[in-house]
Image (cartoon, rainbow, N blue to C red; front, side, top):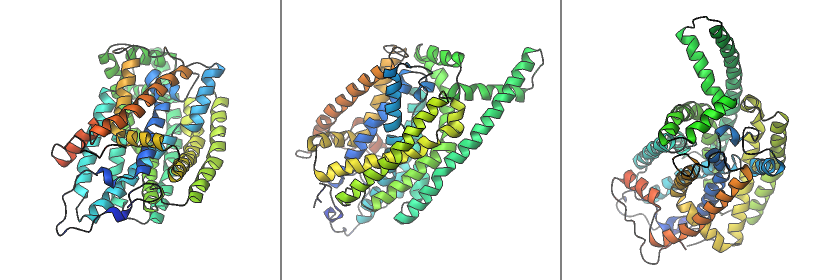
Length: 454
């Protein structure tokens, strides 16, 4: 049975069998069209921001002064993407990841199957793929963190919606607290490194621990407050050979997948996963609430979030996009504003789903969402090939505004080929590999007749 939004309701599950079924990948008939559509919107929205880190040094992601053009066209591009996209679609993706845990659990329990071992095998392989993706392809990997954090958040999946929201909301500020402490430590580390380098230049012999302090600062500075030399080192690496890029990327991804996961993503992504679980239990992500509910969700999310995001953009501009300022305090407004705008985006998408608007386009986004893993990895493979030295070597050559042309082209391609692929195959290539490893057997790839993406 389908509800007004075209989603499969809980009534669609058959009576429990006499014996529990073995866990298996979710079938097309058991999916929620609303969640697939939202996931497709999210994975494509992520690319709008990720293009900056594909095409330019990572510092330029949040700092237009670092690279990418500061004329009105390019600065305007930064303002628009910062306000509407930065952290918004990653937030939606985290909520959907949490919602997926609830959906897997509910589906397994309805069939009398056990899901825990399957979930942890699934997460383990996602962790492995995230490590390979981060080290071998692109430094901006998010898969590792989602897999690791999801293993912890899974333990809370059976809590009530209220409890999940409370715990999630309490987790979120921890990233701000740790960021402030980390910012203060980094500033102190910078001052110590400057003093130690002055002593070294004067001929003093430094201890191993003092040399380690300088090395730690140089690594932190290259990421948070790079100077011209740091940026040039980045450019030389990514415009060089594959081996040059790999050597440069290893210490950065090691820091991001350890310190970045614990000090930031554990609290932000983890908190949002719990909120996503609650929204799933409350029917919000299944488009099962009223049209008025989603309209109010959209208005409240945008009404609170967009003014905060406008302040965030102006605040960073007034502080010359200083990396240490942003790390310590300046990104707090984006941190919270992005969550409200993300909820506004969710309300907008669910409103369109419930209204049956743009149905053909919705189906295309839903197909992208069903292949989100494949499409996300494709972003990295295509964009690193275009911009890195072992590909077409356009790194730093394309201004920020014109990078959006590559974004539009790849989004258009994925909206076209994803439905075509799913008319013929059950999974995207990456999804097929992931599920085959999870269930310890090769999954049937061909789509049964009459069960395509449409």
